[in-house]
Length: 383
Ligand SMILES: NC(=O)NCCC(=O)O
Image (tube, rainbow, N blue to C red):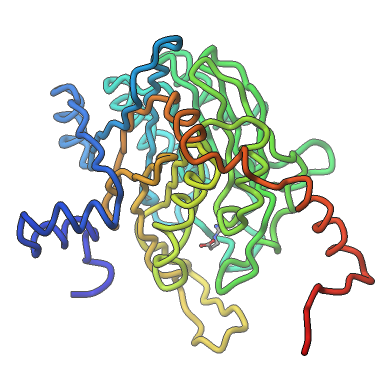
Protein backbone atom coordinates (compact mmCIF):
# COMPACT_ATOMS: atom_id res chain seq x y z
CA UNK A 1 0.00 0.00 0.00
CA UNK A 2 1.49 3.36 -0.95
CA UNK A 3 1.50 6.28 1.47
CA UNK A 4 -1.06 8.07 -0.74
CA UNK A 5 -3.64 5.27 -0.46
CA UNK A 6 -3.37 5.00 3.32
CA UNK A 7 -6.67 6.43 4.53
CA UNK A 8 -6.11 7.33 8.19
CA UNK A 9 -4.43 6.15 11.36
CA UNK A 10 -7.78 5.78 13.14
CA UNK A 11 -9.23 3.59 10.40
CA UNK A 12 -6.20 1.29 10.51
CA UNK A 13 -6.37 0.97 14.29
CA UNK A 14 -10.11 0.28 14.10
CA UNK A 15 -9.78 -2.41 11.49
CA UNK A 16 -6.90 -4.25 13.16
CA UNK A 17 -7.27 -3.96 16.93
CA UNK A 18 -9.66 -6.03 19.03
CA UNK A 19 -12.48 -3.93 20.54
CA UNK A 20 -11.25 -4.31 24.12
CA UNK A 21 -7.78 -3.04 23.34
CA UNK A 22 -8.93 -0.42 20.87
CA UNK A 23 -10.60 1.75 23.51
CA UNK A 24 -7.46 1.66 25.71
CA UNK A 25 -5.19 2.40 22.76
CA UNK A 26 -7.42 5.31 21.77
CA UNK A 27 -7.54 6.64 25.34
CA UNK A 28 -3.76 6.66 25.54
CA UNK A 29 -3.19 7.99 22.04
CA UNK A 30 -6.05 10.51 21.76
CA UNK A 31 -7.20 11.26 25.33
CA UNK A 32 -10.77 11.24 26.64
CA UNK A 33 -13.03 10.04 23.85
CA UNK A 34 -14.85 12.77 21.95
CA UNK A 35 -18.54 12.06 21.48
CA UNK A 36 -19.94 11.81 17.98
CA UNK A 37 -22.12 14.75 17.00
CA UNK A 38 -25.49 13.97 15.41
CA UNK A 39 -25.49 15.76 12.10
CA UNK A 40 -28.65 16.47 10.10
CA UNK A 41 -29.53 13.97 7.39
CA UNK A 42 -29.68 16.72 4.78
CA UNK A 43 -26.03 17.56 5.56
CA UNK A 44 -24.93 13.92 5.45
CA UNK A 45 -26.69 13.42 2.11
CA UNK A 46 -25.30 16.63 0.65
CA UNK A 47 -21.75 15.65 1.65
CA UNK A 48 -22.17 12.25 0.00
CA UNK A 49 -23.57 13.78 -3.17
CA UNK A 50 -20.79 16.36 -3.28
CA UNK A 51 -18.20 13.69 -2.62
CA UNK A 52 -16.58 14.84 0.61
CA UNK A 53 -16.16 13.34 4.03
CA UNK A 54 -18.29 14.80 6.83
CA UNK A 55 -17.48 14.07 10.46
CA UNK A 56 -18.80 15.61 13.66
CA UNK A 57 -17.60 15.44 17.27
CA UNK A 58 -18.31 17.17 20.55
CA UNK A 59 -16.05 18.23 23.43
CA UNK A 60 -17.98 18.71 26.62
CA UNK A 61 -17.28 20.75 29.73
CA UNK A 62 -18.65 20.24 33.23
CA UNK A 63 -21.77 22.26 34.05
CA UNK A 64 -21.04 25.33 36.17
CA UNK A 65 -23.30 27.15 38.62
CA UNK A 66 -22.47 30.72 37.69
CA UNK A 67 -21.70 30.50 33.98
CA UNK A 68 -23.91 29.05 31.28
CA UNK A 69 -22.17 26.77 28.74
CA UNK A 70 -20.49 28.59 25.84
CA UNK A 71 -21.04 26.09 23.04
CA UNK A 72 -19.52 26.91 19.68
CA UNK A 73 -19.39 24.88 16.50
CA UNK A 74 -16.35 25.18 14.28
CA UNK A 75 -16.04 23.81 10.76
CA UNK A 76 -12.63 22.84 9.35
CA UNK A 77 -12.51 22.49 5.59
CA UNK A 78 -9.77 20.54 3.78
CA UNK A 79 -9.74 20.06 0.04
CA UNK A 80 -7.69 19.33 -3.03
CA UNK A 81 -7.34 21.84 -5.85
CA UNK A 82 -10.15 21.50 -8.36
CA UNK A 83 -8.49 22.30 -11.70
CA UNK A 84 -4.98 21.50 -12.96
CA UNK A 85 -2.34 24.06 -12.01
CA UNK A 86 -2.01 25.24 -15.63
CA UNK A 87 -5.70 26.08 -16.06
CA UNK A 88 -6.46 29.83 -16.42
CA UNK A 89 -6.09 31.59 -13.05
CA UNK A 90 -9.63 33.01 -13.07
CA UNK A 91 -11.04 29.52 -13.67
CA UNK A 92 -8.92 28.02 -10.87
CA UNK A 93 -10.09 30.64 -8.37
CA UNK A 94 -13.73 30.34 -9.44
CA UNK A 95 -13.57 26.55 -9.17
CA UNK A 96 -12.17 26.77 -5.64
CA UNK A 97 -14.86 29.29 -4.65
CA UNK A 98 -17.52 26.99 -5.96
CA UNK A 99 -16.10 23.88 -4.27
CA UNK A 100 -15.53 25.49 -0.89
CA UNK A 101 -18.85 27.36 -1.16
CA UNK A 102 -20.74 24.07 -1.43
CA UNK A 103 -18.87 22.73 1.59
CA UNK A 104 -19.68 25.85 3.63
CA UNK A 105 -23.34 25.35 2.76
CA UNK A 106 -23.14 21.93 4.43
CA UNK A 107 -21.30 23.46 7.39
CA UNK A 108 -24.22 25.85 7.77
CA UNK A 109 -26.69 22.93 7.72
CA UNK A 110 -24.65 21.53 10.64
CA UNK A 111 -25.01 24.75 12.62
CA UNK A 112 -21.37 25.79 12.30
CA UNK A 113 -20.56 29.23 13.77
CA UNK A 114 -16.95 29.66 12.65
CA UNK A 115 -15.51 28.12 9.51
CA UNK A 116 -11.83 28.04 8.57
CA UNK A 117 -10.26 27.08 5.23
CA UNK A 118 -6.78 25.74 4.49
CA UNK A 119 -3.70 27.95 3.91
CA UNK A 120 -3.84 30.00 0.63
CA UNK A 121 -7.02 28.16 -0.19
CA UNK A 122 -7.72 29.77 -3.57
CA UNK A 123 -4.55 28.48 -5.24
CA UNK A 124 -2.22 25.53 -5.71
CA UNK A 125 0.70 25.56 -3.26
CA UNK A 126 2.97 26.76 -6.04
CA UNK A 127 5.71 28.34 -3.92
CA UNK A 128 7.82 25.23 -4.46
CA UNK A 129 8.43 26.32 -8.06
CA UNK A 130 10.06 29.68 -7.26
CA UNK A 131 8.46 30.99 -10.47
CA UNK A 132 6.78 34.34 -9.93
CA UNK A 133 4.39 34.02 -12.87
CA UNK A 134 1.64 33.07 -12.93
CA UNK A 135 1.41 32.35 -9.20
CA UNK A 136 1.60 35.92 -7.91
CA UNK A 137 -1.54 36.60 -9.94
CA UNK A 138 -3.47 34.71 -7.29
CA UNK A 139 -2.72 37.49 -4.78
CA UNK A 140 -5.67 39.66 -3.80
CA UNK A 141 -6.50 42.55 -1.50
CA UNK A 142 -7.47 41.28 1.96
CA UNK A 143 -10.09 44.00 2.30
CA UNK A 144 -11.51 44.33 -1.20
CA UNK A 145 -10.46 41.29 -3.21
CA UNK A 146 -12.92 38.99 -4.94
CA UNK A 147 -12.27 36.18 -2.47
CA UNK A 148 -13.01 38.40 0.51
CA UNK A 149 -16.21 39.59 -1.18
CA UNK A 150 -17.15 35.97 -1.79
CA UNK A 151 -16.53 35.13 1.89
CA UNK A 152 -18.50 38.17 3.04
CA UNK A 153 -21.50 36.81 1.15
CA UNK A 154 -21.06 33.40 2.80
CA UNK A 155 -20.71 35.02 6.22
CA UNK A 156 -23.93 37.00 5.86
CA UNK A 157 -25.91 34.24 4.18
CA UNK A 158 -25.06 31.61 6.80
CA UNK A 159 -24.46 33.82 9.87
CA UNK A 160 -20.97 32.33 10.13
CA UNK A 161 -17.54 33.79 10.92
CA UNK A 162 -15.20 32.97 8.03
CA UNK A 163 -11.42 32.59 8.38
CA UNK A 164 -10.11 32.89 4.83
CA UNK A 165 -6.35 32.37 4.37
CA UNK A 166 -5.20 33.89 1.07
CA UNK A 167 -2.13 35.22 -0.70
CA UNK A 168 -2.51 38.94 -0.03
CA UNK A 169 -1.35 41.82 -2.21
CA UNK A 170 -1.26 45.01 -0.19
CA UNK A 171 -1.71 48.57 -1.33
CA UNK A 172 0.28 50.61 -3.81
CA UNK A 173 3.57 48.94 -2.98
CA UNK A 174 2.00 45.62 -3.88
CA UNK A 175 3.68 43.81 -0.99
CA UNK A 176 2.77 40.15 -0.78
CA UNK A 177 1.80 38.46 2.45
CA UNK A 178 0.38 35.12 3.48
CA UNK A 179 -2.72 36.32 5.30
CA UNK A 180 -5.80 35.00 7.02
CA UNK A 181 -8.72 37.40 6.60
CA UNK A 182 -11.24 37.18 9.42
CA UNK A 183 -14.77 38.03 8.36
CA UNK A 184 -17.41 38.57 11.00
CA UNK A 185 -20.80 36.87 10.74
CA UNK A 186 -22.15 40.36 10.05
CA UNK A 187 -20.22 40.24 6.77
CA UNK A 188 -17.71 42.92 7.71
CA UNK A 189 -13.97 42.34 7.60
CA UNK A 190 -12.95 42.15 11.24
CA UNK A 191 -9.24 42.15 10.46
CA UNK A 192 -6.36 40.03 9.28
CA UNK A 193 -3.52 37.96 10.66
CA UNK A 194 -0.36 37.51 8.61
CA UNK A 195 1.85 34.42 8.66
CA UNK A 196 4.72 35.38 10.89
CA UNK A 197 7.16 32.49 10.44
CA UNK A 198 8.14 31.52 6.91
CA UNK A 199 9.53 28.07 6.11
CA UNK A 200 12.90 27.62 4.50
CA UNK A 201 12.82 23.87 4.27
CA UNK A 202 12.59 21.38 1.41
CA UNK A 203 10.32 22.63 -1.35
CA UNK A 204 8.67 25.22 0.88
CA UNK A 205 10.39 28.12 -0.89
CA UNK A 206 7.92 30.65 0.44
CA UNK A 207 10.38 33.38 1.38
CA UNK A 208 10.77 33.93 -2.39
CA UNK A 209 7.23 35.27 -2.48
CA UNK A 210 6.10 37.12 0.64
CA UNK A 211 7.26 38.81 3.79
CA UNK A 212 7.21 37.82 7.45
CA UNK A 213 3.90 39.06 8.87
CA UNK A 214 3.65 42.31 10.80
CA UNK A 215 0.27 41.90 12.46
CA UNK A 216 1.63 40.64 15.78
CA UNK A 217 -0.54 38.16 17.62
CA UNK A 218 -3.95 39.61 16.89
CA UNK A 219 -6.97 38.03 18.51
CA UNK A 220 -10.41 38.62 17.04
CA UNK A 221 -13.40 39.02 19.31
CA UNK A 222 -16.37 37.39 17.60
CA UNK A 223 -19.89 36.63 18.71
CA UNK A 224 -18.71 33.03 19.13
CA UNK A 225 -15.52 33.57 21.11
CA UNK A 226 -12.05 35.02 20.78
CA UNK A 227 -10.21 33.48 17.86
CA UNK A 228 -6.68 33.71 16.45
CA UNK A 229 -4.90 32.34 13.40
CA UNK A 230 -1.42 30.80 13.54
CA UNK A 231 -0.64 30.01 9.91
CA UNK A 232 1.10 26.73 9.03
CA UNK A 233 4.83 26.85 9.85
CA UNK A 234 4.00 29.01 12.89
CA UNK A 235 2.82 25.82 14.59
CA UNK A 236 6.44 24.73 15.09
CA UNK A 237 6.99 27.76 17.32
CA UNK A 238 5.57 27.22 20.82
CA UNK A 239 5.99 30.91 21.66
CA UNK A 240 3.80 31.80 18.72
CA UNK A 241 0.82 29.83 20.08
CA UNK A 242 1.66 31.19 23.50
CA UNK A 243 1.42 34.83 22.42
CA UNK A 244 -1.97 34.32 20.75
CA UNK A 245 -3.13 32.71 23.93
CA UNK A 246 -1.71 35.52 26.12
CA UNK A 247 -3.79 37.93 24.02
CA UNK A 248 -6.87 35.97 24.99
CA UNK A 249 -7.41 33.48 22.16
CA UNK A 250 -9.89 30.78 23.09
CA UNK A 251 -9.64 28.97 19.75
CA UNK A 252 -6.49 29.10 17.59
CA UNK A 253 -6.79 27.99 13.97
CA UNK A 254 -3.76 26.60 12.16
CA UNK A 255 -4.50 26.62 8.42
CA UNK A 256 -1.69 24.67 6.78
CA UNK A 257 -0.23 23.11 3.67
CA UNK A 258 2.21 20.37 4.48
CA UNK A 259 3.38 17.08 3.04
CA UNK A 260 3.80 13.59 4.44
CA UNK A 261 7.49 13.03 4.00
CA UNK A 262 8.29 16.22 5.88
CA UNK A 263 5.94 16.77 8.78
CA UNK A 264 3.41 13.99 9.28
CA UNK A 265 4.86 12.55 12.50
CA UNK A 266 4.81 16.06 14.01
CA UNK A 267 1.30 16.95 12.83
CA UNK A 268 -0.73 15.18 15.48
CA UNK A 269 1.48 16.48 18.27
CA UNK A 270 2.06 20.17 17.69
CA UNK A 271 -1.42 21.69 17.68
CA UNK A 272 -2.46 19.29 20.41
CA UNK A 273 0.45 20.25 22.60
CA UNK A 274 -0.41 23.91 22.03
CA UNK A 275 -3.97 23.28 23.24
CA UNK A 276 -2.64 21.62 26.39
CA UNK A 277 0.07 24.17 27.12
CA UNK A 278 -2.16 27.20 26.54
CA UNK A 279 -5.52 26.04 27.96
CA UNK A 280 -7.34 26.64 24.67
CA UNK A 281 -8.75 24.81 21.64
CA UNK A 282 -6.62 24.43 18.53
CA UNK A 283 -7.76 23.53 15.01
CA UNK A 284 -5.20 22.11 12.58
CA UNK A 285 -6.19 22.10 8.89
CA UNK A 286 -4.18 20.67 6.01
CA UNK A 287 -4.97 20.37 2.30
CA UNK A 288 -5.17 17.04 0.45
CA UNK A 289 -3.91 15.75 -2.86
CA UNK A 290 -0.82 15.94 -5.00
CA UNK A 291 -0.33 19.08 -7.08
CA UNK A 292 1.53 18.78 -10.35
CA UNK A 293 3.49 21.72 -11.83
CA UNK A 294 4.47 22.05 -15.48
CA UNK A 295 8.09 23.09 -14.91
CA UNK A 296 10.39 20.84 -12.96
CA UNK A 297 11.94 22.35 -9.85
CA UNK A 298 14.64 21.60 -7.32
CA UNK A 299 15.28 23.06 -3.90
CA UNK A 300 19.01 22.66 -3.48
CA UNK A 301 18.58 19.59 -1.31
CA UNK A 302 20.17 17.03 -3.59
CA UNK A 303 16.86 15.61 -4.78
CA UNK A 304 16.19 14.94 -8.46
CA UNK A 305 14.25 17.68 -10.22
CA UNK A 306 10.55 16.97 -9.82
CA UNK A 307 7.09 18.21 -10.80
CA UNK A 308 5.21 17.83 -7.54
CA UNK A 309 5.54 18.57 -3.87
CA UNK A 310 4.45 15.14 -2.68
CA UNK A 311 1.25 14.20 -0.94
CA UNK A 312 -0.65 16.74 1.18
CA UNK A 313 -2.03 14.45 3.85
CA UNK A 314 -5.13 16.27 5.15
CA UNK A 315 -5.78 14.79 8.62
CA UNK A 316 -7.35 17.99 9.94
CA UNK A 317 -8.33 17.75 13.60
CA UNK A 318 -9.31 19.72 16.71
CA UNK A 319 -7.52 19.49 20.05
CA UNK A 320 -8.92 20.47 23.43
CA UNK A 321 -7.18 21.94 26.50
CA UNK A 322 -7.61 18.66 28.41
CA UNK A 323 -5.30 16.95 25.92
CA UNK A 324 -8.04 15.09 24.10
CA UNK A 325 -8.46 15.43 20.37
CA UNK A 326 -11.00 14.65 17.70
CA UNK A 327 -10.30 11.94 15.17
CA UNK A 328 -8.76 13.40 12.04
CA UNK A 329 -10.29 13.76 8.63
CA UNK A 330 -9.02 11.49 5.88
CA UNK A 331 -5.48 11.68 4.50
CA UNK A 332 -6.81 11.62 0.95
CA UNK A 333 -10.33 13.04 0.65
CA UNK A 334 -11.90 16.47 0.77
CA UNK A 335 -13.63 16.87 4.09
CA UNK A 336 -15.54 18.97 6.57
CA UNK A 337 -14.91 18.42 10.27
CA UNK A 338 -17.63 19.86 12.49
CA UNK A 339 -16.67 20.15 16.13
CA UNK A 340 -18.77 21.47 18.96
CA UNK A 341 -16.82 22.75 21.93
CA UNK A 342 -17.83 24.34 25.21
CA UNK A 343 -15.36 27.17 25.74
CA UNK A 344 -15.90 26.89 29.50
CA UNK A 345 -13.51 23.94 29.30
CA UNK A 346 -10.58 26.36 28.87
CA UNK A 347 -10.95 27.90 32.32
CA UNK A 348 -11.88 24.59 33.92
CA UNK A 349 -8.64 23.03 32.69
CA UNK A 350 -6.69 26.15 33.57
CA UNK A 351 -8.02 25.90 37.13
CA UNK A 352 -7.13 22.21 37.22
CA UNK A 353 -3.62 22.26 35.76
CA UNK A 354 -2.75 25.95 36.33
CA UNK A 355 -0.11 26.20 33.63
CA UNK A 356 -0.88 29.88 33.14
CA UNK A 357 -0.96 30.57 36.87
CA UNK A 358 2.29 28.71 37.53
CA UNK A 359 4.05 30.02 34.41
CA UNK A 360 7.10 32.01 35.56
CA UNK A 361 6.68 34.47 32.72
CA UNK A 362 8.46 37.44 34.21
CA UNK A 363 11.49 35.21 34.92
CA UNK A 364 11.43 33.92 31.35
CA UNK A 365 10.98 37.44 30.02
CA UNK A 366 14.14 38.57 31.81
CA UNK A 367 16.15 35.56 30.69
CA UNK A 368 14.88 35.72 27.15
CA UNK A 369 15.80 39.39 26.94
CA UNK A 370 19.36 38.40 27.88
CA UNK A 371 19.62 35.48 25.43
CA UNK A 372 18.93 37.74 22.45
CA UNK A 373 21.81 40.10 23.33
CA UNK A 374 24.91 39.68 21.14
CA UNK A 375 27.12 39.31 24.23
CA UNK A 376 24.88 36.66 25.84
CA UNK A 377 26.78 34.04 27.84
CA UNK A 378 24.85 30.78 28.30
CA UNK A 379 24.46 29.58 31.90
CA UNK A 380 26.51 26.38 31.61
CA UNK A 381 28.04 24.94 34.74
CA UNK A 382 31.35 23.22 33.98
CA UNK A 383 33.48 20.93 36.03
N1 LIG B 1 3.05 25.99 4.44
C1 LIG B 1 4.08 25.83 5.25
O1 LIG B 1 4.48 26.74 5.96
N2 LIG B 1 4.65 24.61 5.23
C2 LIG B 1 5.88 24.34 5.84
C3 LIG B 1 6.04 22.93 6.18
C4 LIG B 1 5.50 22.60 7.52
O2 LIG B 1 5.49 23.45 8.39
O3 LIG B 1 5.09 21.47 7.71
